[in-house]
Length: 455
Image (cartoon, rainbow, N blue to C red; front, side):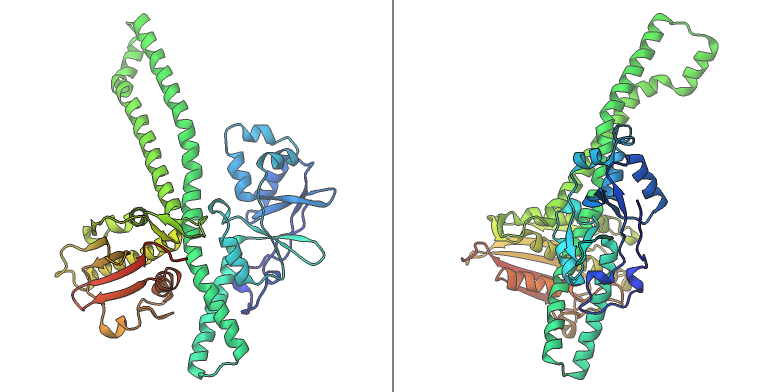
């Protein structure tokens, strides 16, 4: 029923730029479909790092069930009782889970890019690798990200070495350039994947469970309160012990407050659902084509995601956001990519304001971000995002859009954020992007993109 392969961490592997999936840790765990659901549950409990299992029928491959999908379904009301003692084939036919198969010869960089293009609810699911003999293995998605990160660091080191030596073989340069392009895209998609799958998915499951059971709790509590009222009606003179218990528990207050409390919980669930929808709107991972969208909707969704950083500010100096939206028509664009630009620039503005507060606590009064939009005479959507921080020195401003240039400490930034923004605005949308800043007078990033695409 069970066969495990070497499970060292991807961090401990010596990977190269052209490393493939066969160099990663692989789980080879198989279980026959005639076995019951409780056996699979015990298997997952015995192997806490096991990301999923391979289902077989008479030792032939059937499919895969991930740990996340299994426990997500079994935690629902009645699911455990329904499937625990039934063959796994029944659960598999009910779930009909999707699985993602790649050849073990696939490059890690390519595999990362392909897996991040999956729909948001499946982006963190494990992947299946298939070798030349037709044997399947399971690779933990997080192990794949660790390996991609290691190759990312290796690529940066190689590029720095290339710059110092000033000479690179043509073939090696092509490999580095291809890796660099993929890494730019992977970083953008990894950030979106983490937001959508890591937050929206994880929050959405428990909130659906709570919201689904909340109306039952409201009905039950109302029935109990009605039952208490009946007792009070037909037994108006309870014993001394009961009277003391009623006085101690403040029964009349509970009868009034409990429905309000449950209603507030329902409102809280609705609010969290709105935030999850905003995350999905922000990412738009499933929209790879140009579409006509509302730019203001994307900016507002991004601000909602960043709300915690805007309000939970050190020294209780909340960042004030001023929006001066003009009348913009729907704009033809890659919505997910454009939202990533807004995220990078707004996050950088918040970082700049935080730094300004730390360096000049006495001089800085009210940190603020101004967002303006307008339609230019030549039918371009103009978006301006400005902060009132310390500004950007001229020597730094000249290198802002250069790949790998960053003024942040090691571990705080890769130097790819603004480079990606520039690439998205200029190359993907045929627009313009510039920065206007003077030391002590804040910084303003201005983006212009055509409202309509030509061709």
